[in-house]
Length: 248
Image (cartoon, rainbow, N blue to C red; front, side, top):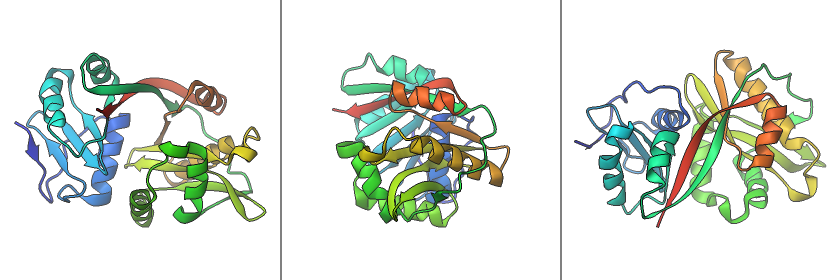
């Protein structure tokens, strides 16, 4: 039976996967009893997290049908992210538009950060993010509140590059927990691309994360094959696949 987590109730122990890191990161940032970021679970240890219409589900394939039925009933879910096993099964179900992406893990120690890396405020980063992602960029208000909150609580890191006092490239962690950090939001202004800036931001950010905790795993999910090839040259190794679904 699926239940709503109440304040103070702890999540079950989850393995270190892309989806579980997002779930644990949201719990660390907001707790398990907030109305705007609800968590749902069952007695088998499956967990669903929803924030700003974006749901992340960690569950076994044996229990997926019940959870997908529950998700279909939710009018507040716009997207759903799941691991490969559930994603492959769900791809054959009606009512979804699906994309799949690789998950890569940093397989080597990054070099020290470049001297020109800096930290930016969320307001400075967002125009670069918007220029890079266009209509796929998250709406500013929700993104700003989430990033600012996680920065204050040490659950978000950023690395960026300025040219002539203008932010031109950046990378940030989109989810962090004790054992894993996920890098995302890698962006460069169009006129500054193909200069290696994004790679320098990713490596600098990875170095910063591992300096604080050398045992931490660093993950990244490239948005296309070109980005995947870039991250391979930086020392990332493809290890998994995730599926993202848009609710029709």
